[in-house]
Image 1 (tube, rainbow, N blue to C red):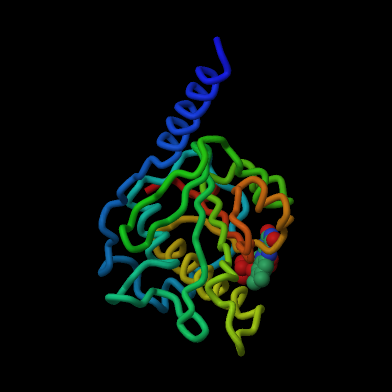
Image 2 (image 1 turned 90 degrees about the vertical axis):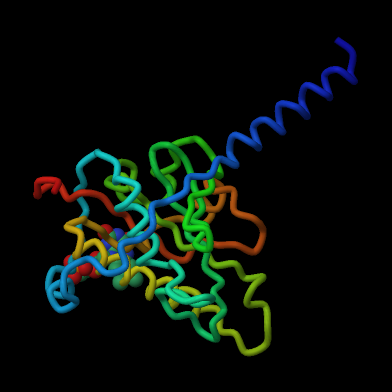
Length: 212
Ligand SMILES: Cc1cc2nc3c(=O)[nH]c(=O)nc-3n(C[C@H](O)[C@H](O)[C@H](O)COP(=O)(O)O)c2cc1C
C-alpha cells in the first residue's frame, strides 16, 4: 500500500467517524403544560445522589433539557442569562456517549460514543448516574466590555434550578455539582478553545422510589 492509498483510507475513516459522531436524536416535543403545581415542586425539591441504573426515556430526558435550557419563546429560553448572552451550551453525558443539546431543534447531537460519565465529577455516584448534564460557558460569545465572567456560573445555576424543579415534578432524582475538575471535563468532552464547564447536574430515577 503506497502513502497516497494510506492517506485516502485515513481520511475516509476520519470522515466516517465524524459522521458517526454527528448522529442526531430528535427529542419528543416537551410537555409544556404538565407537571405538578409549582409550590408542590418547590416542596419536593431536594438533592439525590443514589440512582437506579436505568436510562431516562427520551420524553423525560427531553423534558429535563427543555426545562433547563430550552426555548419557550421565539428567541428566548426557560432560564434567564445576563444581558441575554445565552452563552451556555448544555452537554449530556450518558452511558452511550457525549451529546450536545441543540435547543433550537430540540435534539441531541452526538459528540462521542464513549462512556465519559466518570470524568464529569469527583464523587463516586457520578460514574453511574444515568444522566450527567454539563453546563459549558462559551467565552467567545461574551467577549465584550462589561461582561463579568462569574455571570456564566450564575446563568448555569438558573438552569440547574430549573432542572431541579423538573426532577421534583417528574419524580426524578437530581443534584447540582460543583465538584469536578474543569481540565478533565474539557478533555473528556473535547471542548473547543474558549469553552469551559461551569456546573454539572446528575439525574436519574432515585433509588428509594419505584419508577412510575
Ligand atoms: C453551587 C453548588 C454546588 C454543589 N456541588 C455539589 C457537588 O459537587 N456534589 C454534591 O453532591 N452536591 C453538591 N451540591 C448540592 C448541595 O450539597 C445541596 O444542595 C445541599 O446539601 C442542600 O441539600 P438539598 O439540595 O437537598 O436541599 C451543590 C450545590 C450548589 C448550590
